[in-house]
Image (tube, rainbow, N blue to C red; front, side, top):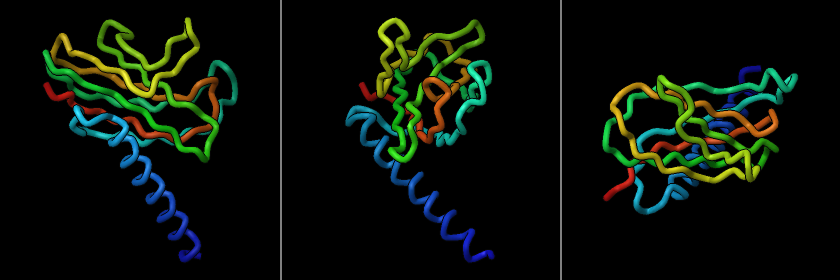
Length: 138
């Protein structure tokens, strides 16, 4: 039984590594990779219970960051990144007015401190994506 579990785990790890590598390239030549967030979420059971991955990190004042998201083609979900500080939502790659998801967003940090990154999938679809946090070089 152990033999059946290991190959699947290895395939999933290979898929994650491939997605991370692709997304690092998508971040741009002016961006230096800092961290990745691999997210795999099930389909929402209702509109009010959309699965979300939550990550907290410290960002530094006067630093230009880029958040890039890349979706696995094996799942229907399109990843949405939302960035919050202690006062609320400050940036997102989703524009609800245009109903458009952007592959990346740039963020110039105005205050050193804790920020929370939420990653979910549009309309609560099942999905797998990687979010890349990069430093944008001057």
